[in-house]
Length: 348
Ligand SMILES: Nc1nc2c(ncn2[C@@H]2O[C@H](COP(=O)(O)OP(=O)(O)OP(=O)(O)O)[C@@H](O)[C@H]2O)c(=O)[nH]1
Image 1 (tube, rainbow, N blue to C red):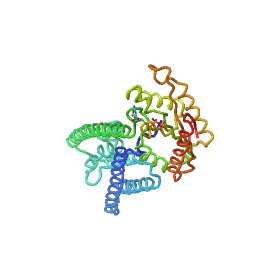
Image 2: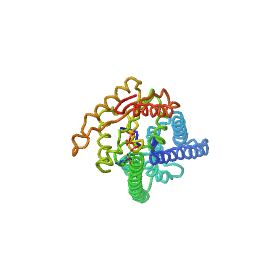
Image 3: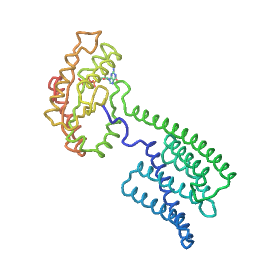
Image 4: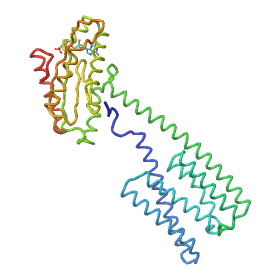
């Protein structure tokens, strides 16, 4: 039995909105600033700086255009990281306007943690620090000239920003995961019957329509079977409510054994169950119902009362699409009534 949770997890979708905001903000703001600075230096004859500013600006805009077209958030975040890294390293290599390039490195750790999370983020930031160390302490490799005092203070500040950024992101992610887990378990709990651990009526009424709407091709034609234990009141009255509960649990276990993983078994009412068989026709569903019926009648569900035969009646109907679902439930219920009134322990 699958699908017990609602279609989209709220915690996961909020987190992807967070990453989306960072991606859009960084792309639009950075490309705008770079474009403006590029125009400012358009006639400066500093061609390297112009190439860095215009090149990165257009690359950011291209990435965001591709993201809008494809909606591939993970890939766009990776491309964004590469672009931000290239921009930062290019600027440090050049020195930027009046040797101010190092200031532009400081947003990098926060952006990378935001886009890629703490685990990958710390690796990329570590790599950046290594490359920066080589570039800054091997002045022959770069065009810019930075003072030693400036470099040491910059590296110390960077290490602090990365460490604090990682702590922040690591614990934010942990608390997010804990909340997502809690939400999932609460959703599963809300849609599960506590006694039989089958799906409950709330699942059928509220969650199932979401799955139908999202992936109708996985369900229809959908066979609807209603199963109702016979003379269950008598079992309760004769052997006690706890023995009645035990019967319900045993029957639920039997459903799980006899049904396929894609089938859905729900406890629909007290001793009434709804079995949903995706992509199944009326004949096959009737055969399955009869197999279950025979299984219940043969099995001795109460070990303390080995002579007790418990039976169950069934009604079967078919829904060709979502609009026919409630109608099919109603029809299966009417056929169940026929099974009951014609002697019980049968399928109609
Ligand atoms: N033990 C137990 N009994 C339950 C539970 N939910 C409902 N019931 C009982 O199920 C019985 C249903 O009785 P009826 O609706 O008269 O149906 P029935 O005795 O099975 O008769 P038919 O359906 O006509 O064969 C009632 O006695 C309810 O109290 C439950 O969770 N545990």
